[in-house]
Length: 336
Image (cartoon, rainbow, N blue to C red; front, side, top):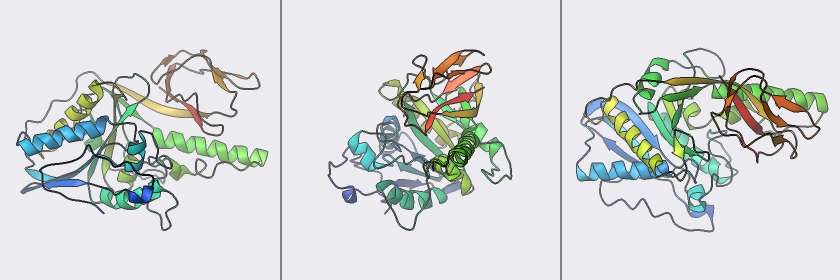
């Protein structure tokens, strides 16, 4: 299902318009150097309306075609459009969010399950993943990182140093971690609420594995991975951020043979520690929040439909606020 092609005449800007998900295929392009080295994978358009990664990958492929970039060591696999159905719709999802509950399945129930049965084995063939995304809000670029080294059941990991070293060379200075453990905290609360009320929760977001996307899956098969949020969806600088990150990654890992980029100077590291669900469609934010808006202890974040007010319990930041989230799903995250 993976299509490997010579480095010429790419028609990557052509995604068919179709009425049937069954008409789509999956595509990857791999380049292998003459010398041994890391096995890198770079993906774009996991969410179909986040096209900066696709544009950045196309530009690097053009560089390779023109001889401006050489692949000297190891290998690099590009997936310009990871979710072709969502990409054709110019929407975040095809049938559902590909970046949740990502794992192979015996009986695919939707288009994203079919992607998973192709994508997960492909990820397992690599050691490093750079996954390029963008955001609705006009936020500066930032990278989502994994946990510290641990042997726990949720997300055992042994490549903390390598992942952080690569993150420092991407060209961004803001890093966020704590995703999967915070998501698991939300799952536990949903399960507790279901026991208390007798109302069954959504079976997807009441499962800790539902928080597993591309980077979490990569770590689960022994590699390390970074999600780079390149900026706002339509910002013309977002593809530039993605392009620079790809070139820096190829250089830092020794794949392209170019001079390794220096580590970024000033950094800001945030740790996500809590998630609050939307309980009712009338739950409303006190203002229009964006990720990385600062919170001061006592700030009013929002009000529940019954009049209960939600205040910031400590100084910190709000992350991934979603004013349109469905009841029973994540409303916003908190970080410090």
